[in-house]
Image (tube, rainbow, N blue to C red; front, side):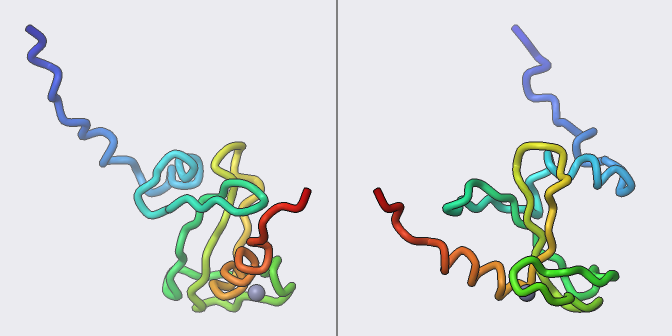
Length: 104
Ligand SMILES: [Zn+2]
């Protein structure tokens, strides 16, 4: 008999907001994974309300102004140092453009 088998994991739902930066790689609720020709990425949607800073989009080399909804992409492994903010359309164009079958 093991009566503790179905103990709910309440602690997991009570993580403080301030710890988000360090937990962002483990929490998969708001993110989804995407596999492109250059490997695996984790994507997170940033709403316009949550976009408080100016970011440089690596797709078009232009600024993403505050208040504009966009996406953040980073590697599912590593420490999150490679996180990048993209225009939503630039991210889609990027995967579309490089989604070619590999040549041999
Ligand atoms: Zn862009």
